[in-house]
Image (cartoon, rainbow, N blue to C red):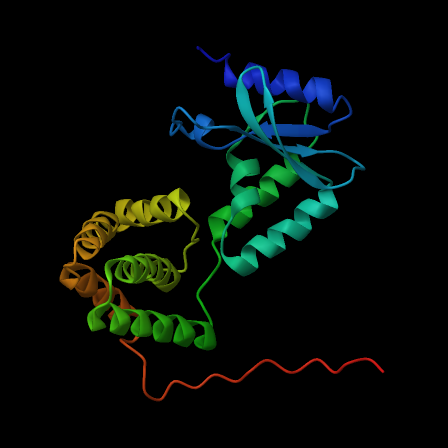
Length: 245
């Protein structure tokens, strides 16, 4: 079954569901030229007043994800995304196709574009040490040998931890799933490196019981952060919350 044009469909949905929307944007894979057969329509919506929420539905044959916000909630979510180093909302709004005519929402879009371009900055010393320690521990587990189900889970953690540390060392955004891969690919494109393919190939070899290639690339990334960190690692616990009497 051929789906209707995504932009026209998204615009029709916004008019139907949110006639008072100041602006809305069609974002995600269908806009970036990365759509697959199962891609959905990601639509952040900006209103003056609304119960902020996320909603999943189907419309005109398309799966749809709605992200319904006020300007205040967008600012709040931008801060949350910055803290976790994943620019989900900033990317959707700044790269999305506007669906409502007029200039309302242009300021929010510019702010999101600035956040996306600036990146999350570099990890502080504590965050970097913890990332090094975690990946070091995972590599020790990978080298120790385990039954295939456990080994495969460890190999995936090494792949993910290596990709996240690589991006952190470059002061770049990270992501989950496909977006983690895309962020590493973007770094490769900018730097002329080949980490995305090397991590991919290393993971597949590790899942086949051959962890050497994945270990090599993980150690190369660790060297950018100061190398493996095991003995001597020290981390203070966060302050305990005192119970109210």
